Length: 93
Image (cartoon, rainbow, N blue to C red):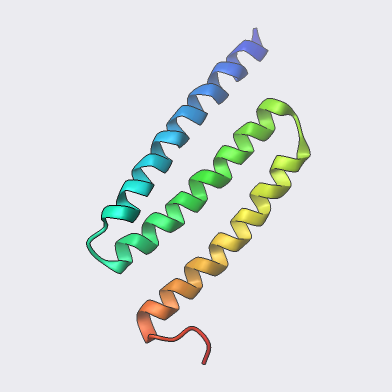
């Protein structure tokens, strides 16, 4: 009983994350300002990281969790760099 509940919950989460990624891609392509596009990239990174976590839960493989950790670290660094570039016009001082 509990494995079927976990299977359906993970499946529903993956569908919702795919929809969130589609919405983020739409905002990335359609965003009127650069700040909207940076926010879309950040939410796209987050959705991709969570999608990898759900795939890791489904396949019971640790590789996906490690890949999600790498995506999380890269998304933080890229968001900080893009925000600094939008604020000051340069990334490295």
